[in-house]
Every structure is written in structure tokens, then in C-alpha cells.
Picture 1 (spheres, rainbow, N blue to C red):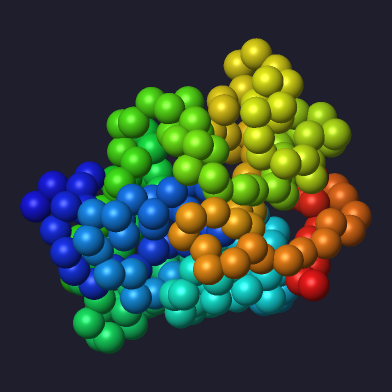
Picture 2: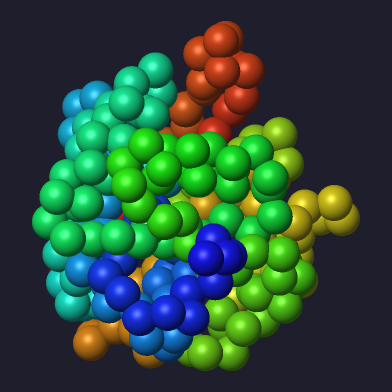
Length: 231
């Protein structure tokens, strides 16, 4: 079975960040006939924020409710991430899930890791966006009517002013040269709040923008997070 396709019907989970790529991967998987039975999302050690995008779990839960899919959280440090992720995959396998959907596009190291952890849990990795042109995927996402807000930016690539903006044509037009429209190199992350996969829009309010400097062992990079709260 080709791990880059979702042509076969079957039970699946989605490795869920709440962002545009995992959302488009879910959409494509459903369109191909897959039954999405679970989303899984990593939180930080405190359990108060998504591990990479910084979104609070209440908003991720509201997002999952609008998508009509159960959501399972687990908390992990970066050092524990692989171990906890495999445990979440094995729990899903025990409940009858046989496929895991990921939103990665073309980073080979990511795909190899996903296939490795899925194999350890008895699941088949599926990458519906694999090797698609990055800008084409962005255009498809917007053309379908999905709506998203930029919730995290990497200060090495973008100034703080890009944080909190709508992910739309104006945002893309303003990106500096060399910054990927998909943010696939880690330039920015998004939170999807509406679109064809949603029964209704997810209500939220922007609050403050919070800076965060990664520890030296993770590069000391400055990130900016748009804080969101559920309404």
C-alpha cells in the first residue's frame, strides 16, 4: 500500500495541529472515502497549550467539535514526544484505527519519522499532500473556503507584525522573498476556524501577542504567539 495516498476506505486518525496543512489533509482523506475517527494533539508539559502552535486546548476542542471528530490530547516535553506519540497511536490501534493521516508536504525526514512510529504502532502512514507544489496547496486551501489565523511566527523569518493576521491573499502577498507560502520551513503556523469541513465557524478572540525565546539547546530562536481565547 502506498503511504502517500488515502484512496482506500478505512478507519483513520489525524495527527492534528489545528493548522492549515493538517486540515487540508483531513479534508482530502475524507474526500477519498476514509473515515476519520480521531484527532490526536500534543500539548506542552503544562497541558495549557498545543505543543508547537501554542493554541489552548479549549479552542482545539471547539475546532474538533465543529469538525465532528473526537479529539485526544496528550502532554509531552520535546524529549518525551516520540514515546508519548507512539503510545497515542497504539491506543488508537487498540480502538480499531488502522491509518494515521499527516499533513507533511515534502520534508523527507518528517515522512521517515512518521512511517517509523506508525510501523511501531501497527498503523499505516498516509500523507495526502505529499510532493504537491506548496503554493498550489495554499491556493487550494483558500479556494475551498477555509479560513485561518496566523498564531505563531518564527522571528528568524518574519517580524512580529505578521503574527495574528488572517491567512489570506494579502498575507501571502506581503511575505518577504524566501519565506515559503506554506510555512513548511517553520516560518509560521496557523489555526483554522472555518471552512467546508466545519459544521460552523469556531468563535474566538485575539488577545495579546506573546514573545517566547527557545532555550539554547533548541536554537535560542525568538517566536511570537498570537494568544487566542474561546468565546
